[in-house]
Every structure is written in C-alpha cells, then in structure tokens.
Length: 233
Image 1 (cartoon, rainbow, N blue to C red):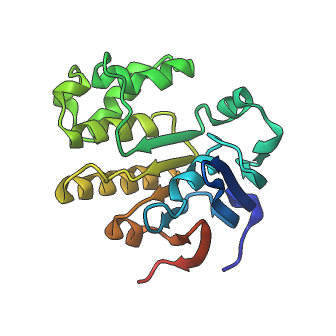
Image 2: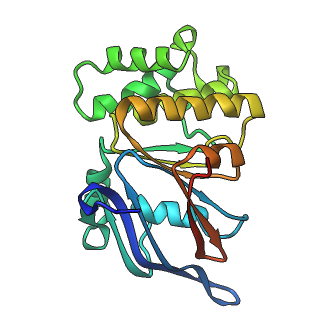
C-alpha cells in the first residue's frame, strides 16, 4: 500500500517502553513501528498484557516512550512537556474508554458541552444537543451518569469524544463493558460519526466484529507488532 506521508495523523518509530518492576526491568513494548492515516480506522488487537493500552497511551501522548519517537498531528511528542501535549490534543483528539469516564456531577448534556465550552465554542449547547440527538439520547439530556445504563453512558462518551470534530479518536475497549447488542450499536455510532467527520479511529479491542470493520489491524504479541494486516473482505 502506498503511504502518503502528508496524510499521516500519528506514527510511531522504534517505540519501546520499559518500567521498573520488583523483579527487574519489564519491557511492555519493543521497537514498535506504525502509522495511521487521516480518516483511517485501525484496530490494535492482541491478548491481555500484550501492550495494547500502553501503546494507545503513547500514541495519544498520555505517556512517554522509553526510546523511539511518536509524532502526533505532525508534531514530535518527545520535544513537548505535558502541558504542550495537552494543548496539542485540545479540540483535535478525542477519547473513548471502556469505563466511560463521564463526570458524575454533570448531566449528559453538560458532559458533552464541557469540551466545547473549554474550547470557547459559543454554540456549545446547540452542538451538544445535536450530537446527543445523533446518538439517540434526546430523551436523556438532563440525566446524570448514575441515571443512565452502561450503553447510554457510552453513547454520551462517544458524543463527547466527537464534540470538537477531532482529527483522531483513540478508543480503549469501547465495547468492553457492554452486552453484544449494545456494543454493536456503539460500533455503528463510531463508524457513522467517523464517516461524517473524517476522523481517524484508533481502537484497542478484543471485539473481533469491531476489528473486522477497521481498514487495518495491528496485532501485538508480548509488546511487539507481529502483524500489520489490511481488512479482510
């Protein structure tokens, strides 16, 4: 496959991650190379403990590699401090987690409005209502997370993640806490909003159905990429 380097939204070059453990130095990732292009959907798959979530955190600039380089939206992250990386992500990078990460004291509407307000969007409320309508939650605008089911909470999280029309969205096991039917609905939402906004999706997942819908999949085994495969049609 021809790679257009101007189109790459995130890439890792020879990225490794070691941590100190009681038994000595533990290698979580070893010499990982990957790239993700604008609008592409990529699954990162592998057994538990293979390094998937660690890799996602490094790609998003939530953590630093021990060696190697991550370039996010054209900017090498190892040249930036934590504040600089947060600034780079603001409005351009969205997140969806397995455990939803909603603010408990805020309603569904307020949770989705928050990133828009922080970005200075004067139409935050209108945009948030529109997004919650797109994810089928018009009747739940004023409910707090405790009043929502798991699937509804994840739909709020998806709406919030897409609120700033990010260039790239990182999702860590977005269907992991959901039953199969609800998980399928979340998958459909992610791909629907991605199609509308042209957002690149980077999905860590155990969900075969979700991985099969992606354009490519990277398979990790013991911290190394053992396969970079296009979607099987």
